[in-house]
Length: 351
Ligand SMILES: NC(=O)c1ccc[n+]([C@@H]2O[C@H](COP(=O)([O-])OP(=O)(O)OC[C@H]3O[C@@H](n4cnc5c(N)ncnc54)[C@H](O)[C@@H]3O)[C@@H](O)[C@H]2O)c1
Image (cartoon, rainbow, N blue to C red):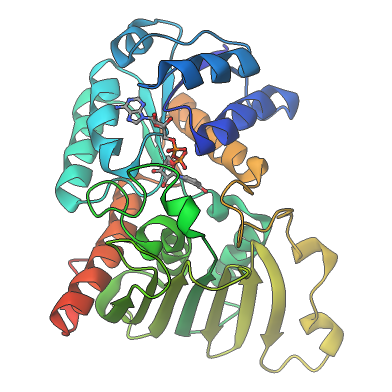
């Protein structure tokens, strides 16, 4: 059965969703098609629809009234995610919500509750979980190859111009966006938590150094995980020209380093054969774009994999790989970083 997708918000990320939906049947991942889009900016929505071969509906209600829309991709500014997604859930549509889940825990809770109450599936985009290097790292963690986890580092040193922040009124605001950590760093915050387990406490410093924006352009945090392991988070949009996003996980038996979705280093204790510790083609990963300095440079394949995962979850009745709750957990870490920076104190998390 062909699954119909609708996209709400036809800006930068919507193009990746449209391409990912088109990729699903092309790659045999799922039988799906883009049915319709909508945006409050009707002119750009019409142009987007024409480019992707589907109609633009005049408003959200019209898109949600379509019986051939099974899944709604929420691609509006972050502070509107829950508001739009809750309406879509009420219409019985399954939900793909862009990251972050929203910008407040209250909004995230309302969205998660609405999805549960209406029985629709909800996934929050964290496309890098589907990058080949991350899949391989998770396998090594599940096998216990790294031993007991000790240290996890997540680093996003990207560059965004002032013009980027001025390209839309919602960018760089607390109400609709959040800062570097909420927008750009949240990807690797989710990966860090996914690998290391729940965070128990964060201590942080956030600063705004290179842009005229109300939110931070650089955030640094020390994390204590519930397991007793520790870690660091760094996120910046002030690091010219932009560097690979980096995740490094260290356990008692070894360390694995991931950059932009590829494993670039792995070393295991007691492994006498240096070749076995070298990076091999099978774990090198498939990321082909570097988004460090370019907001539109996003690998479509990982989005497609997450959309396919949602459809499989719908078909089989299981939870999606990235749940609303895990989107909320990443948001909780981001908000704890902000609170710690504001108060100058460590902040405990609920887990
Ligand atoms: N997963 C990723 O790698 C990734 C990358 C970029 C952006 N994002 C996320 O995607 C979301 C959108 O970012 P973007 O860069 O595409 O923004 P954008 O400004 O380019 O596009 C947002 C669109 O939403 C529309 N919109 C605003 N309010 C609306 C409403 N009430 N109903 C319908 N449409 C509405 C705007 O007119 C605009 O066209 C953000 O939450 C961002 O964090 C994710």
